[in-house]
Amino acid sequence: MEAFRVYHQYPLYYEEWITLKDGSAVFVRPIKPTDGLLLLDLFQKLSRETIYFRFLTHLNKLQPEMLKQLVEINYETHFALAAIITADTKESIIGTCRYIVKENSDHAELTVILRDDWQKRGLGKVMVTRVVDIARSKGLASIEILLDYRNEGMKRIFASLGYPVSYEPSILDIADRMEILLQEIKI
Ligand SMILES: CC(C)(COP(=O)(O)OP(=O)(O)OC[C@H]1O[C@@H](n2cnc3c(N)ncnc32)[C@H](O)[C@@H]1OP(=O)(O)O)[C@@H](O)C(=O)NCCC(=O)NCCS
Image (cartoon, rainbow, N blue to C red; front, side, top):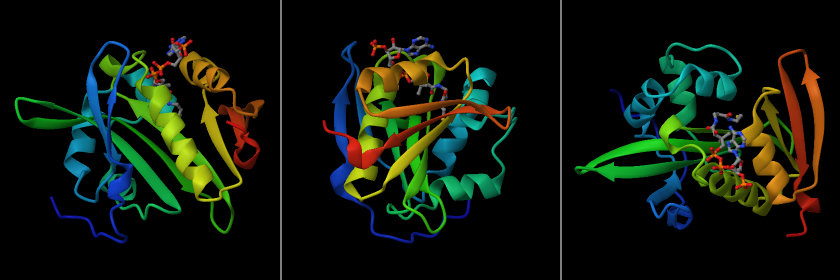
């Protein structure tokens, strides 16, 4: 696979080990331009429901152009974290969480996706918290999340974080929308 171009300096300081409630250790780091194959591998392991909840459409494969967009990030207007495990010296990405700033604005959209066998273990909440904190530290005004109305996991994460969230049901009949005003977060 062709190596994707690096646009910006990799921000090493966002790397960390986290320990989940069940004791598993997961390495979380910013996505790198060389992560394409690991993301393809992750995509191939996802259930149809997980893919639908993330992309709000039924995707059978990640097209090269989309994959390129997912790894060619600049860590400012497009920031993404990957959660990594290592088994038998082989690394796997088991989830990602990112924000992408809308053109000429200080508003971003947040997306998150975890491999099915790593869901409901607390990882989604940690990754969302980190990405919201990073967006906030960069001075963004708000973050929106588009979600299927059945997505209880996502609703629970935001309910438990205690952020000031506004909730609009079903825009364009595709998805509900949550918005967090980042500069109003007190915690
Ligand atoms: C949504 C998603 C990121 C949640 O991540 P997760 O790691 O499974 O969630 P967590 O384990 O951190 O759970 C956070 C809370 O939600 C609850 N929860 C998680 N999934 C749930 C579900 N399907 N139904 C009900 N509650 C759920 C957990 O019990 C936990 O509650 P607590 O804080 O009271 O303990 C993950 O399920 C996922 O990748 N889904 C597919 C993609 C997606 O929906 N993306 C969102 C739109 S971009």
